Image (spheres, rainbow, N blue to C red):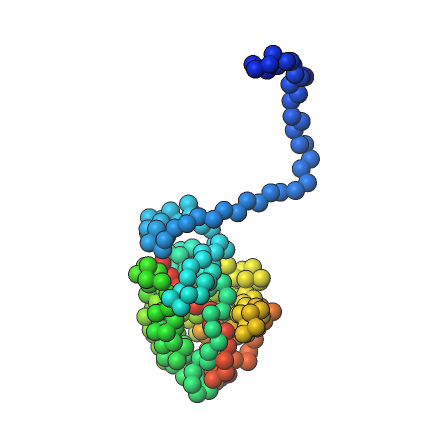
Length: 244
């Protein structure tokens, strides 16, 4: 029902028509926001158990590496190994590299060239405030009855963390969980920028050696599928993860 209202400036009268309620909406509007913060602020929120006020799994955080490259880092899992912690994963591959100089998976990820490369070369590229808040994670792998371990600031996701129960029988680690981020198959596809400036999808490494072989680690192919063809001396995409 309409009513008359009078303008206080000119005394003219107008009909006040109520807005009709949309009874049958046909679209949903999703709003995205950008918030400036620091890695120290993010760490404080996580330690206080209030990460939900800042981000959800699948959200991305942009930052600049020491070499000037701008990267995106995804929220991969919340409380994956305990309370008040968050696992992060680079949105795309930072580099191409081999797991080992020679074609062997002996010692698994823990004793690989890749582990040294991540925690020396790549770690030193991170901004200082991020380096200061990363929590080292103890990676433990049991291969052929022998246990290997390493304290890592940066690490690659495992077969189980990406694919969950589907490949559980091939896992050489215990007490693992599939990261929420990778439950969506789209998030298993990784890209890298080529020399021409265009992005291309590529095979990228998992830290899990293929049990029963002496030369292979599991890979994710350019379509996001798990593959059994990663010779350790071959080059593959490097997509680091870390924990706060």
